[in-house]
Length: 96
Image: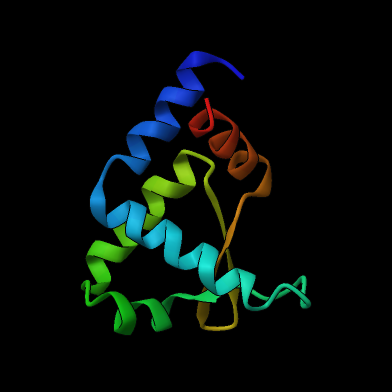
């Protein structure tokens, strides 16, 4: 992966709220590992993280732009999932 893309990923994760949001999505996704269509419903995050909806929306967009997560509409709900390719890159980079 290019250094530019890796820098974009690290910049996205350098914000405390985005990092907390990313980790919470990852934790919730792991509890639903048997269901490949499972994801983290955004309205659930609003309660657990105590961050306002506009702030969560902004941070989700930043995580999505860095290709750390993928979002999908399910009816009126927005669901976020970890981008597993990028997650492996982050793990490998942090293990250095």
